[in-house]
Amino acid sequence: MRRRTVTAGNLEEILQATAPAPAPAPPAAPSAGAPARREEHALRTEFEFELPRGYVDEAGTLHRHGSMRLATARDELRPQIDLRVKENPAYLSVVLLSQVITRLGTVTDVHAGVVERMYATDVAFLQDFYRRVNSEGHTRAAVTCPHCEGGFEVDLSGGRLGES
Image (tube, rainbow, N blue to C red; front, side, top):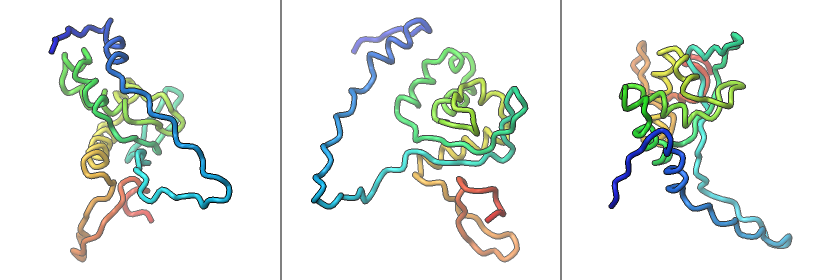
């Protein structure tokens, strides 16, 4: 296998050369007389979330609701060749989150600069949310009531804790 030196100038060229082949065209729709076959186990690839504090943009607008998609192998590999990550390995989570967050309120162009300006509480929440979605495949967390010691699950993608 040949080793390549990656620089900022040829990063896009390498990513394009290693891009996956386009997906084949979907099969033709069934005829009007045939019953439509429903997809039983559709893969959920996007998850909604609500930030604990929220992102405040340049105009002063608070954005709390957003969505994150499942990460691909490419999403996890790309930060490894990012010069900012090579200089500061702690920057990896900023780059990774900026690639998988698809929307934050009305902000659809979520880039590393947006994640940099988030409160630490929100970044920690998103790191945990990313881990749950991509490692465990769900957004539920087991919790215990501090008063009655009863156990139950909460969905982290829904409203704030304590709200119904």
